Length: 161
Image (cartoon, rainbow, N blue to C red; front, side, top):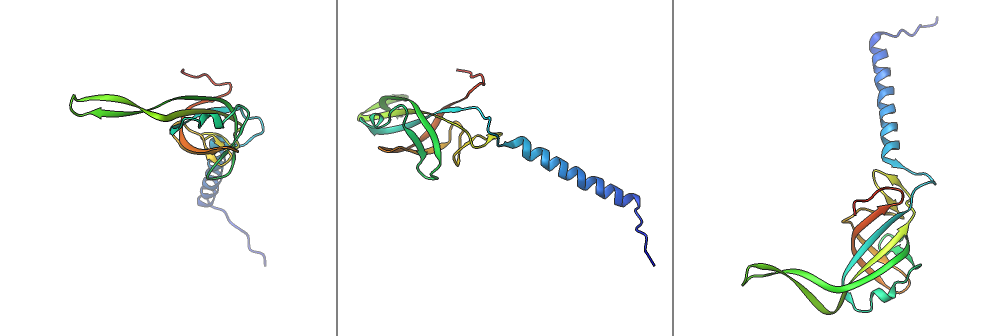
């Protein structure tokens, strides 16, 4: 004897809910983390503070930059700038803020252009998430440094500079 499978309205509601959950999860995952070969280039600037005077000279346009901690390739140097090292402090006697310069030190700004490995809600180059304010460790053949991403631009998007 064969048993017939009977479906009732509760079974149908459960099946529809399961399909809806899977459809929502698929749409959410694809929206927030897209990996394609046609991603725009991302340019970002790393501020490395309080380094020796000759630090910026160790970076040249065209140098390949890697993540010094995670090891992924971040991109190629497109610009290097150095300014005298400064720090913001307080003058407790007069009750005001002062900017102090340090002899023998500089603040270096290294601009890197790279191709994201993931692009969407988060931009990832190599294994490093690229966002303004993120601490990043960089290295090339002649120098290592750590600093914060202070500027970022995605090719083809407008900026508010």
